[in-house]
Image (tube, rainbow, N blue to C red; front, side, top):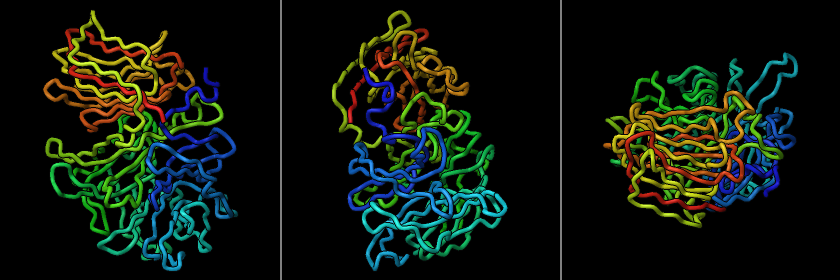
Length: 483
């Protein structure tokens, strides 16, 4: 049996080698490598003084841990931010060659007043991100008065030929522009959606609509607390950005939720993915600030979601964000189980023994009038995680009430639901399971639910059930995954 310190460590989700991790940071692609930095406390498994941990990958599924990227200095600890390739050497850091620039929040207490200060700073690397130099002119952007002034996401705006920064400022985002990443000018504010908590970790990018050749801008921002499932989570807006301001298509007061589970936060996309690839790729932190410091791991704490591809789809005349696991995940598939045309009744559930806890499942089901259909995952003695569909409410749900260890925090247990219309009684699901997590993608990524679980290592059975009437499983493919 695995040593207890590794009991819940995922097989194919990114985790720190040791100690604490939260938000992904500085995600950039350069010279064949995906860089993933992350909020890191190298001395403990709870949140503390923040550094940028660092890892790289060539395929989004196998990661190489590298030495810490950014360390606290006289300007403060290193909060969240982004990284870009300065292709045109607008900074002058790279003697006319391209290089990597990190733009991040320095956080400290004012040496005289003791008040919290959050200011934006730069670091740069000429050796593919292996070593970093703090810019001597830090900070490059100071808050006029607001203490919540953080998490810069920066991108190059081609038509304007300048850098744009999206910054979280209490319960709004602010836009700034710069010719060189060093000198910043205010452009505009945007606020809307849920105002229940502080806004954090914004991102903004253009995305092509699946059905057309049109591009729209997506503005994503996280909120803590006040998300749809309770605690921390993400919302997004679809609209236009004219180089100065963001104008949403839908009323700004109607939030669209990125994920209906408890455990998707601080999602941010990779910068500079080559045009030949063309995908918008991102991942998020797989936890919730309600209980992140208390999850039952030791030696290390917290994981990222799988990398996901983002797209826009027209649904009922409105554009909605779609998330699907990156195709590179398929390279990890090993054992395969296939089932076709199986009738499921209340008296005759479908049982699959010993499939394990590291799974990639794809299934299509015809509901046939049943009021509730579902899957019992990571099933063992007195343990199960339910993924199901309530036909009467037209809701997809994940219930982790009996998923294993749940009593480490009162906000962890329970059932989370997402509104989802079936397609004339047809339901299509992709489910990823990995020792301490379940990620559910319904109707080709239109709705996602991301939830942590902490089952016993022996809980590896699976069962499909209905509450009444019947359902027809058209097909189900189960692959074991191993990095």
